Length: 448
Image (cartoon, rainbow, N blue to C red; front, side, top):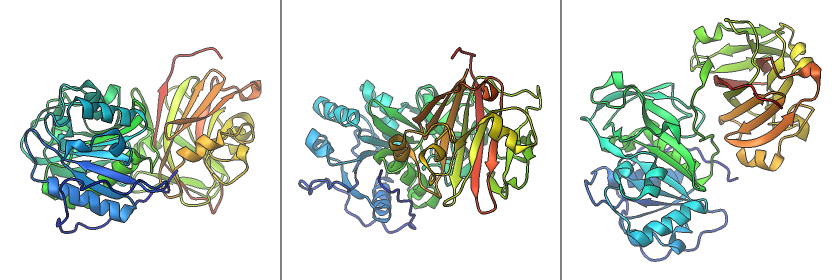
């Protein structure tokens, strides 16, 4: 995959060319990332569009991707779209593409193209079902511009990884005709009690992502105001969405419903966990857990039943600082001896630098991950990754940033997965690994 570029710049003057793409540009090089910003309007026109284009250009300069901007729908041909890794619909409104142009864009997405929708992109092409599915939801109404609290639901995606669990900002907050949660992965939602005029009954997504018909899509409801594009946090949010859409960063954008937190960044949720062995995994002010010392393990002791889990989907975010070792243990009996997990359960490895059966995504010493898929899905040190570890009967599967990289079946009765605990390893004095947002969804019991 391309090396992700996560560099921020301060706001600069908006004296940039924002007209149509003039003439055919040079063909896209093999390693060149190029983004098209499309801002045609057939309805209300936002006066922040020039600032938005300027911001994307500046992000591209700092982040290593080229940016073209146009309001000419004639740019939507198969040949021209093939030059771009993603198309940003920047506060477009109304019907902006004809049937032929719509067809070209559909084929572009189906061939792996990227889409970024900003603010009024949801107020666009109401009669084009493909576009509605790609954007995720259509605009319905909005109250006056005002401050609100944004609850950040996914802090591993590059669009939200730099944010705290709550984000207070001022914008024009859209209500949508439908809730995208069932078919898209919600990254952030509005706390409707923090402002007036929300109409989505307390479940109000405001940013989301999804894989759609072969392509990648990211949408943010922010970006109405000129000030948004001078705000470093919003610029980083927009940059992360672009990086996901062009394929420079990996993320799990499958819909996520029905999970409950085991650790949500608070000391209260940590009270259900116990440290086994030396070292520790300690809570930081930003709501993350960081390992030190070892070899030990922080494991979840269910305060209700005391029993383990039998059939479940476990999700968590993790990040290494460099060449650091850790893992996630599953399927072991309750014990304050970390070696009980080693000898009676399975470790899903995090360290990316060991032998294939002992590296990221491996069932440690038992089965390697699919290395090619793993390498494409893995974000580098310093950036967050998401694991899903799914246990059903004796079958154990691992997804990294939404990509399935391992499928293992246990045949050892000593290591039965049918009733076991989960734990986070602190490996050694030099290993610094961070965890956050540990959540679980219990699944119906199935046979092997």
